[in-house]
Amino acid sequence: MEVRLAECAGFCFGVKRAVETVYEQIETGKTIYTYGPIVHNEEVVKDLEKKGVGIIENREELISMQSGAATVIIRAHGVPKEIYDILEQKGFEYIDATCPFVKRIHRIVEKESRNGRLIIIVGNQGHPEVRGIMGWCNGPVTVLETPEEAEKFMPKEGEKICIVSQTTYNYNKFQYIVEIFQKKGYNDSVVNTICNATEERQQSAKVLAREADIMIVIGGKHSSNTRKLYEICSRECANTYFIQTLDDLHLELPKAVRLVGITAGASTPNKLIEEVQNYVRINF
Image (cartoon, rainbow, N blue to C red; front, side, top):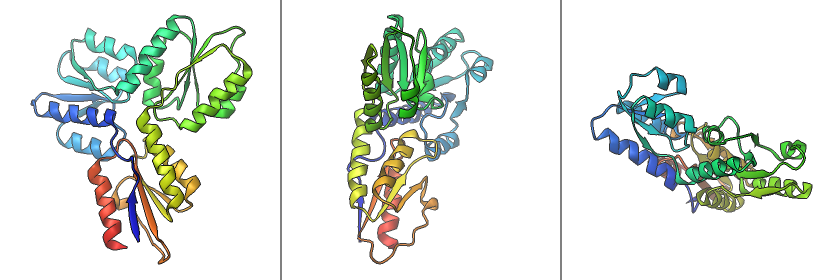
């Protein structure tokens, strides 16, 4: 039996950069907080908590903190502009670990909304990245998650639109939604803001899942990009498992299994991927 890892899996550039930033700051001996969990992976967050890193969950908690009492690291998903304003007003030292691909979206929506365009974000409204993007818009903003929502959406007559995407959104779905808008003939500006790492990860997972008898997807249960990998793999391979850690893996492999494929979300550490790979190789 072969165990094969997808060509693109695990930490992406933005997540690696954010996590390394926190570990570097721990070494300084300062009191460290992250604004929200630094990434969507419980194992990473637990390890940072053990090392004394606190989490500020929301703006109210930030406002209630003693001024300048700690170094605050802004999460990889980014935050609304208002959070930067509060940090500066209260005199906090802060380090911006927002993924550069997300930062690019902040600049786009800030500029386009100032120019009078309605901003449409294709993504999950409850996701911290999307909430952060919304917080950089200087005018009306709408979030659409599905093609069905795009079909029903009716802007005001003559309204100019700018369409962007959550960086981890499914690439094919985004293209489909864009086509819906184009068929309706709206005056729209489209910027594909899905990051290359997401496209590459989704494509390599799809290719592997087509060949695999069993597919294992590793990542945090709150991770948007990992859930999308699971959806993609499930369509290609009926026996697809979504796990957070090795403890979640309960496999009973029939003898006919030739290939077990493994992929992992952008917030999944290499150590965890290697543990799963080695376990499957040794035990089956």
